[in-house]
Image (cartoon, rainbow, N blue to C red; front, top):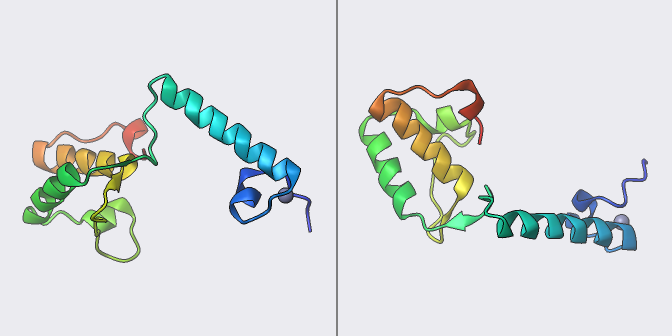
Length: 111
Ligand SMILES: [Zn+2]
């Protein structure tokens, strides 16, 4: 088995050895730094109000939302506590593509 200690992945899977804790602390510091300098974190959770409204608009137009987002479950469900910035951006882009008729640039496809 390869020695993969010293990674955030290993830390998330429960290892608390010094190298894994250091990797996690480093990742947290980088995230905090990015956030302080105005970066939008795609994993941050925001209120679902806009996402819910956009989802309803897309459903009314019978847009294949789950298929376009690559969801295996076949239906997008929004968590009542909020959605990630990533999901909100995906819904905005689908709205832009289907409701405004403005296709995405290739570099905007996957937030
Ligand atoms: Zn470890």
